[in-house]
Length: 404
Figure 1 (tube, one colour):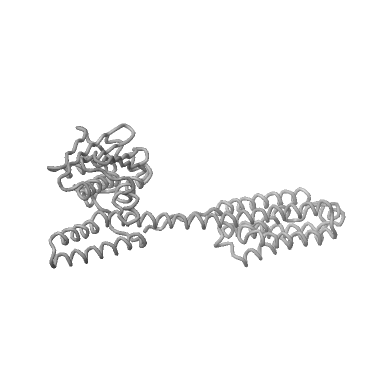
Figure 2 (figure 1 turned 45 degrees about the vertical axis):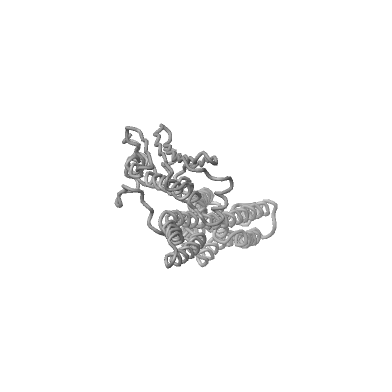
């Protein structure tokens, strides 16, 4: 089974944090340059601003993903912010500090806190914001109204981002599990279809013929019946990968998106008891869709032989409409009694459920079974041309659409 692409819901947050750090650095440098003459020791302040700029630019690759943004780096990054906050009263005047002047790192100090939030969730964010808040109180020399406002704002924003990140990670894991389950289910259904189209039908025929012949053949038929039951149980609970069952006339090496005339895959089913009616013009479909649709027709004919009897006649009608392709398989058998399909599915007989409806569902189409006891059965297989753009991408859809 092909590995599904990795879904990352937090990667945009790391990119946003990278942009925030750069913009916050530019703001801090511009603000200090504007007021540098008012500092008591501007040289020391300039030295720290140079360190801040170098640290920010050199560590940009570290804050672009969770793998590179390790815990030691987060601690070092937070220490750079704390040094700038606690250095402010040393290089600035007391009047400016008491008056509410911003610290040297200014908004940049929120960057490490946000990194803690994205990396570790709301608990890490609460711890980092509390440390920055205490350092701001120490820098100011006490609690001030404006100071408390900034601290509380940083706390709520960082913890909110941390909580959202945790929820996003949980949703990502749940989605990944759902995708794996869906892939396994589709794999199991494809296995069930392929086995039903081949092995199970052979075993069922051996059992039936063995019982008719009797003697040693009856024992062989009994063993075939036991193996059939065991295999049905295995199919129901053990997904695996097997080659796709190909319809008569399908090329083994045909690319998945190569345009194929559906008529060439349907006409081999024609015989003394099966009549095929198809348009005069080619019915072009992507090869993967044409093969699956033809295989579903083959499964419907197998059901006719098995349930309607060897003397039953069947008619296949292929209709090429602008928006969809419709294939009808009709027989003159006794029909299907009400509730028979439900019983068959419960018994592990998956001819209609998987070999027909499962195939059409995978193609984005529908399979409708119409049966009246005593009046035969009709299976209508519909495939929307628009739906076929999904499984193999727009390139494949364009390839077969241009041939029409």
